[in-house]
Image (cartoon, rainbow, N blue to C red; front, side, top):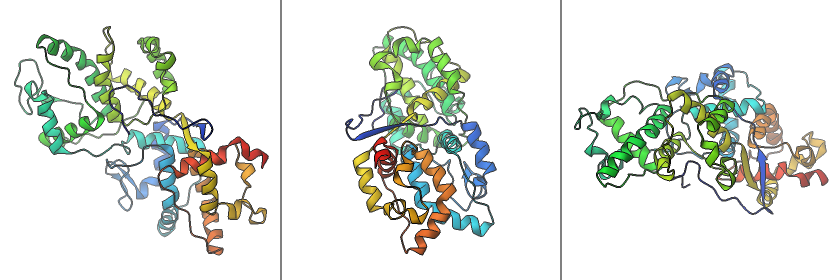
Length: 375
């Protein structure tokens, strides 16, 4: 996905005849953090090194699908293995509500589960080619009044990074204008590569990369108070621009954004940026799209119809699912009914279905579709 340049980039949606849009429940990362412990996820999984070691660390940067439906697909695919591991450890399988799934998703986002990997070699080349090295020394200053990289306090905290990049961009633009030097725009991948390089140069200082976005409601109020809402109207309205942004994407966008406004942008404190990010996160995960026709075919090829079209199996009929299924609903149903489903499928010698790419989005779009009510 291309996330370069704009504060929130537009991702083209499929045609109205095929694309189903579902409104998602907004999650809270603070509640998600508590749930991660309360539901015993931390017994097996860790977040940035804190927690169990028998399952993957969910805070380590690795390339993953960046959406609720991709997370739902991964959870579905690995559920039988997870349930078996929990049984061996004597851990009770928890049930999750739609809201709790949304909260956990927000927490995984805050833990940077969805960040893309960077390349230190490319990062070093970019640090020089973008002319950052002309002003910023690595361990000692090379220009008066300009901090070396070793003195930066924001490289491990994406909220602080976004705030400092936004505030620094104004001063830097003035300096570059005086020297007739082009303003160095950064893509998300370029910023990621540079951060990997710079962190390697100064070493790991032991600070956690975890953070907590503030309330989306507070962020929306600030979005208006800072004058952002006055520009983002009509076709610039952020609500009309569904996207999938990681935290580094936000930081790169905040760096590039001052180029697109003629007025002096307001400074943003760490707490203000925390509130804005909380609001922007809620926007980008508010709606989910999928192809109903593909989902209808998947319902057959994944053998869902074997149980859900046969009332004798005790599974809810297709029509009972209409208007109810989003990716968060699918995960909630998985943890509530999944073990019984697995036992029943084994009894019928059916393989547990696996989902790849956009398949979970398509399936939930079909199950959510209003036309199921009339089947």
